[in-house]
Image 1 (cartoon, one colour):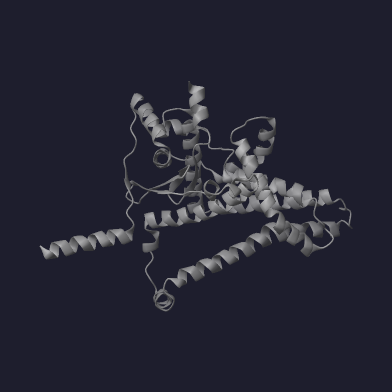
Image 2 (cartoon, helix red, strand yellow; image 1 turned 180 degrees about the horizontal axis):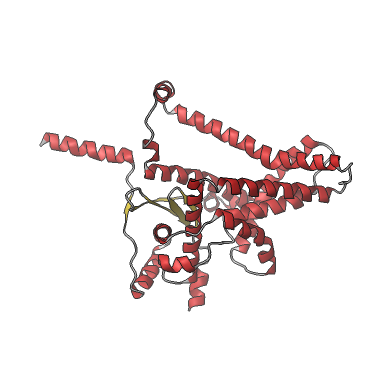
Length: 354
């Protein structure tokens, strides 16, 4: 019975760490749980239907991976922004005269322009660090060795290892920031609570704490799989012209993303020698991108799971908790500030009329 429970729950839910909280997604249902400054957990739920469910074309292998990648990037940005709103971070900083001037002159377009500039700079930085720099370093090594690195496969291997080195160094440096380190703890809470749910144990912080914080379907593993696949795919590209190689690498990104998605889906449901070897670098990397959470952080992740999973699983989990004599930490639905202001104004108007 336990084995059947584990299999039926396997791959049912996935998530993402956000600021002081966790987002969980199961099917079309998405839940976001955040622990506020007052120590209480606030939650919000919404629907997110993938294009893969709406149109058959987007369910074709490889294409579905690209669609999923774009959708998850958008969802990630939206949930991070919403977690900031739930924490009230946007309201903490006092508005400067320059901010007021920009708001008066630009209005709502200001944030769109700033976001657009940030996105462009992010793309330029990403292309420079992870596409151009590794190629230039490999070319430089070839020059310093007097042109001894003639084999295209060897060149691609060196290029790939340089790219991995840059990625690991970047993640390690970012993890030194206290805010990021705390987000990594919530990342660990996400993984541990999902592992606890999939194992069939009563979904409590104490049980989740015993579970592994490493997961084969993690985004970190996905990135490392793509880095490994890029070595194989890029070995077929020309080294004769730097700009042609760069353009070719950009064109092969959808193929690498598609292949990476197919592998991650397979690895999430199969454990064999192939998946253990190929998944190992990504799991090792999770030693940096996840940290051991405390039970209060695990409680937030568990709250997010319970709000996201289907009703029959929710009742099953609650029954397991009741049988074990455990209780779920209380949470309350989050109310956006604009709605709070509107409700407050309506209440004030009502009292004034009376």
